[in-house]
Each structure stands twice: as C-alpha cells, then as structure tokens.
Length: 284
Image 1 (cartoon, rainbow, N blue to C red):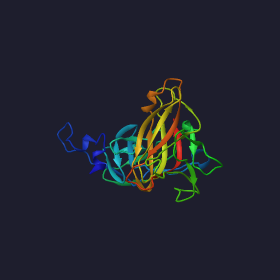
Image 2 (image 1 turned 90 degrees about the horizontal axis):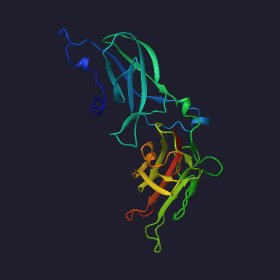
Image 3 (image 1 turned 45 degrees about the vertical axis):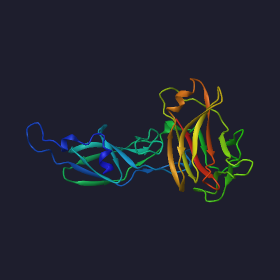
Image 4 (image 1 turned 60 degrees about the horizontal axis):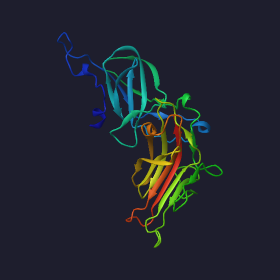
C-alpha cells in the first residue's frame, strides 16, 4: 500500500468524472522495476546506491512519487516527454523521501497509447555540476583522510575484515576495561570544509555496519562545537544512507567551515562495540 500513498499527485483525472459528466479517460500505463545509477569510478567513487522511489514527470509536470517496483497510470495520450528522477530516503527514514538533488533526471520521448503498458529502465548519473565532490574516502588508498579526535579511547583503522567492497573499510572497536568501562570513540575529517553557499543542498553518502549505535555530526571550526545530527542503529549487514546536512549547516556561520565527525559511545549491553564505514561522499 505504501507505493500508492507515496504519490504526491495521484492523477485526480483517474478518480473523477470529467466536467461533461462522462467517465474518466483510459490511462496509459508505465512500469518501472528500478532506477539504476551509472558512475565513473575515477570521479564518482563507488556505484553503491539505494534508490527506492521513482519521481515521475510528464512534460515537466509531476505525476507523483512511487515506491518501486510500480505500475503507474498516466492520464495522457500521444507524444510527450517522460522524465524519471531517482528518489531516496533522506537520513534513512521513510517519512523523508526526496528526489536526490545530485542525480540527473532520465528523460525520453514517448507515444502514450491509452490502455497500453510499457516497461522502462531509467538510469541516472551524478550531475556534472556536483563534481568534484568535496570529499571521497573509500579507505583503499595509502593512508586515510580521517583523523582520530582528541579524547577518543580507540582509533579508526583501515580494516580488511568484511569490508563493504574492495579490500578495506574504516573500523573502530571499543574494548571496555575496569579503568574505562564505557569507552568513547570519535574521529573527524582531516580537512575542514567550507560551508556551501546559502540555498545549496549538502549531503553525506555513507555505507555502514555496526553492532552499537553511532552518530555523525559537524564540528564548527569557529568555536570547536560538536553538533550531533544523525544516529545510525545497529545492523548486521551493510547499509547505505544519504545524510542531508543542509539544515544542520545552518548552525555554521556564513563563510565558516566545518569538519564531519563520527562518534560512538559504548552501550553497556554490547560486549565489544564496533562500527564500520565505507565510501564516504560529501557533495554540495
């Protein structure tokens, strides 16, 4: 039922009689199984993506947002332009679904025939204007672009045990001791990033796996204040999240800069807390 609840404009013409009192016109149906992503590894990094929704437009007019796979009625006929944008779960929550602003919109001319059903296989790319990304870290190079924060009880290491892809991921392991029964971990980007101009979206993409909650936030360079933003819940399998930083960046002054940081506080019910991260992309 969710895929139908997602529709922002669910084609009222299909639900009502027309103004002359006759039945609604027979729609044309399109079917979309998935929205793919084409990447150029040298500039885009990983092809890892989660695109659960399609935002469908006809001649630049929004038809609706639909959870995939979906068969979608279009109350049009004849020659038109069909456009499909890839939709994400912002911050990993089903209540915050958006068309990802850094993907292109797939587009094709179509001849819509009422009563027909056509399958489409849209593929999107990263927008050229989003390059170069502010930050790309896949832990495969020599060294890493993340440093341990002062006061952390454990380091972030390049780890070859069960990486998401490739040979390495970034991992932190907390070992409770008598002296430190509830250890804390924190690391941060080695680079301080300039706050994007007002009005521009900013996202952090991340693959992650953990058995203990951890969080991501920003460090305001001007006053060294930590701003916790999104918490990641334990998961035995690797997952992907698109973290929208636009709102939290409001706490950074215009012309200011920030570090991205990751933190984890040991849960007393978890014998050996651990977190694993990979394929970090900071994009605005």
